[in-house]
Length: 401
Length: 80
Ligand code: HEM
Ligand code: SF4
Image (cartoon, rainbow over all chains, first blue to last red; front, side, top):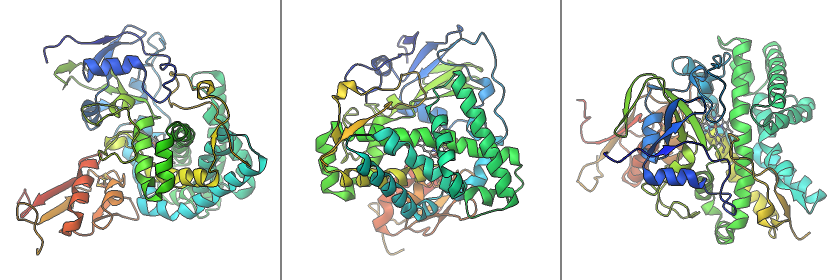
């Protein structure tokens, strides 16, 4: 690879107007130059931006690239060399093996394809309840607050065994946890409050186990603090992602009427539609890794200590991997997106997310055959490009009552 | 091994449970060949000699496995 290295000096803060589903132009541009670019972090550290599908997969399957929080550099904010502390016990998303697998392993049996399918009926009920409420109080409605946020929050309550009486307050807590945009004070407050409530829940399950994932886990050598951290990771990784897939996915369906019509005409297309929406939208846009030693990558040497920004978003639009990558096509043949990641951190909750979406989209479009945006598409407010998860802030929709 | 593939040989498949991280991609993609254990979510091979109509799905599953834990081979095991 003798080509000069493409250099990116600032990360984009917005997408092209009118293209809310496509990765920012700067990142697509970087991918056009090659799968690996140099990126200068705000504090001056020269790291990497990986935009290509194959290269991202090789980073994600290589244990020499670490997920540990204490090695991470913020991609856009200069904290003056301040190092983040390691994550608290149980928060395994930002740990490496063997610590990571101490926590992931006991959860793996709880999120199998089979167990998640057993939850389908319950997810259908929860979905129907929210569609009932939306139908009663509308039109119009904000799809985010009426549907996309509360459904995953309710499903998590179910999984964690939150007692029925406490669900409304837990749900409100979880939603404020989702709302908080990273870095600000509200986020810290919401994080602490959520952690505290999960701590109380763990203590309650320890004292009186019921039939749920959290109670089952109290029957192990995991401490209360560890369980609290694990529950927090489930929320942090599982709520905002699923909520934004449901809302942004609906937006995408409404903007692609021919795909929506195909889905309506053939429910057998649902599973592929969900995979294609995952690929096309890539709501989990970027994740970070740090090189623990010098690694040859894409013909270059990534030095120990270098930070890498992995753009799952552009990987899922890589023209070398996907035919017509920017086209939303439910009949697409090439699978294998990285919307749930790859390697040892690949999404633990993916089979649950699939159930929620495979139930949610058909139920929504089936319930409201005339569903449409209540405002012009250009007026839909998107989240800032700097937020971790891509999505809409709200989605005003209407239908013929 | 009554059934054969294009090269005239049946396929076999196996999972390295040490590498498996319980993603469920195999059980999702080729459910008649792979399942997951109840206790730890790791993959189990239900049919080490998969029926011919599942060969494509088995190969897909091997390609989708996030940790490369699934091997597909023809005839004898590569390590024997
Ligand atoms: C459509 C919705 C979802 C998307 C797009 C998504 C995406 C992801 C991605 C990309 C990762 C890997 C992060 C990395 O590479 O560092 C991940 C990890 C994870 N996800 Fe999801 N996720 C979704 C839903 C869920 C749900 C519903 C749950 C659980 C209830 C969940 C729990 C987790 C956990 C625990 C991890 C950490 C796994 C580990 O570190 O081993 N996710 N998710
Ligand atoms: S796809 Fe791979 S990691 Fe996932 S359950 Fe099957 S063998 Fe395990």
